[in-house]
Image (cartoon, rainbow, N blue to C red):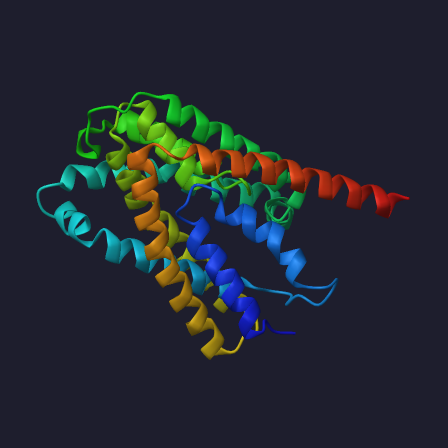
Length: 273
C-alpha cells in the first residue's frame, strides 16, 4: 500500500503550514492521518515521506533566513554556540526515550488523544506570550542559560500537539527578546533539529530497508509543496507576531484540542461497548 498523490499533497500542505505557524505540525499530522485512510489501508511505514516533507520545510527556513544564516558564520558566531546549547536537550530527550522505551515511544508519539490534550497547552502558551510586554533584546544577546531554557521548551515539543515554534517563541519572549528576535531564533534553532531528525530517520530507513511509501515523483512533489507552503507560513507568522495577533491561533488550538479529546473519548467508548 502506498500514498496516493492527493494524500501526499494534503500532508505536505499541513506540514508546510503547521511546522511554522505555532499550532503543532506533529499534532495535526497525528490527527489527520486516521482521517485520510480507512482502517488498515495506511502504508505500514511513512518514514520516507516524513523525511522529504521535513526537508521541504527545512529548505523554507534556509531560503527565508538566508542572510541571517550567512551572518552566523561571520559576525554572529556567538549565536552558533547558543544554538548548539539549545539543541542539546532535544537530542538527549529523543535518544534517551528511544533507548528506554523503544517502539513504545513511537506509539506514544502517534497518540491522537495525547495530541488532543497537548493542543490546548499550546494555545495557553500562545495566550501567555501575547500578554507579555515585548522585550528589547536581540537573539544575538542570548546567554547560554537562556538558550538552554529555550532548548528545553523545544525538547518538550516532541509531544504531539505541543508546538515547537509556539513554545520556543514564548520562551524567547519570556527571556526578553523582541517578537521578531524570538521568531528568528526559534527558526534558526529548528535548523539543527530538522536536519538531525532527517538524518536519523534516513539512516534508520536505509538500515531497515523499508519500501517507499509513495512513488519517488510523489515524494518530490510533496517536498516541493511543503517548501512553498512553508515560505508562505514563515511570512505570515512574522506579520501575525508583529501585530500581536497570535491569540487567534491560540483559540484555534484550544478548540481543536477539545474537539479531538471528545472525538477520541467517544470513539474509544464505542469500541469498548
